[in-house]
Image (cartoon, rainbow, N blue to C red; front, side, top):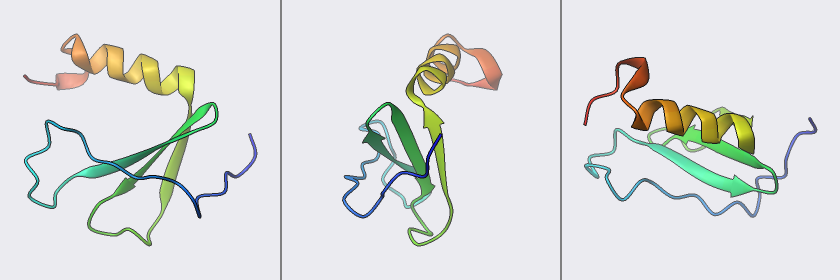
Length: 69
């Protein structure tokens, strides 16, 4: 997987976020999802293939990985 160009990425936080600054920000990229710490926007970015990100969301939404609702 090549390194994506994040210069034009449109970052967002979940609508369920408490909006207290302790969030992750996401950016949808072609075939990928980028994730970063909202407190360190110039810091590292994790990039996942879209299918892996979708699987992660499905597992957490189903209560896996210790997620709570």
